[in-house]
Amino acid sequence: MPSRKIVANELAHVLRQISHPDRIRLLLKLQAGEMTVNDIGDALEISPTRVSQHLGVLRAIALVETETHGQKRVYRLAQPDLALWLIEGIDFIAHRLSRATPVDIQHAKQLWQAEATEPAI
Image (tube, rainbow, N blue to C red):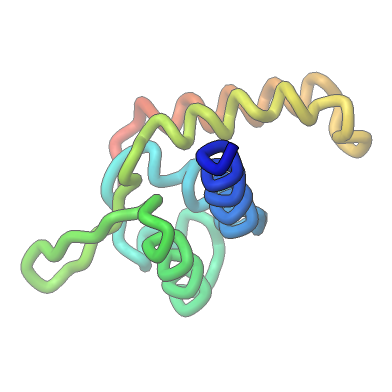
């Protein structure tokens, strides 16, 4: 079944590209809306250079879009449901998070979900 193989390969490619902790945090941060590189860097405590590199990877696989507003370039999720999917995915890996208690896991999910309702910086 070639179609299943093509889809499985594409999904594997996307999962490989987002498999960096900073990229996951970046995707979750963008659920709140449009942000600049500097806004993202400040929020995640990552240098703007690294943020730009991660955004380049995410743009290459069409998970992040960019738009220019005057002098600023802003980034947003191409599919905002991606962040919700990542948050829900925590339940699937919770048993593997030996360093985190169930309370820690629930707290992290609540914080990320709350950011979705807060306006971007």
